[in-house]
Length: 68
Image 1 (spheres, rainbow, N blue to C red):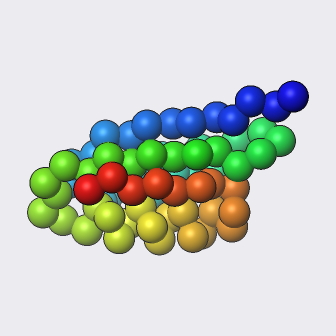
Image 2: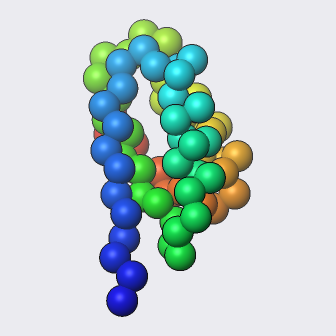
Image 3: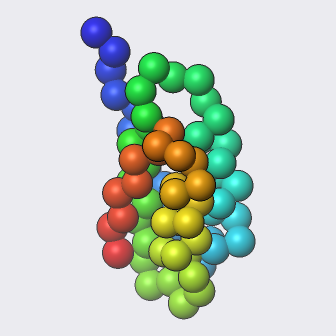
């Protein structure tokens, strides 16, 4: 039985760096998608939008869960 992988990413004003992290996670070779919980706290930049765009670009290799 394959156990799911869950990554929790605390993020505040990380719109510039978050896409690279999510891309690196998406490149991992695992039998199932990685669940990524991005916890956004009082960001004043485009962190949420950047996370969603990066997850969409990952073509199903990531399951994004947003906590704002």
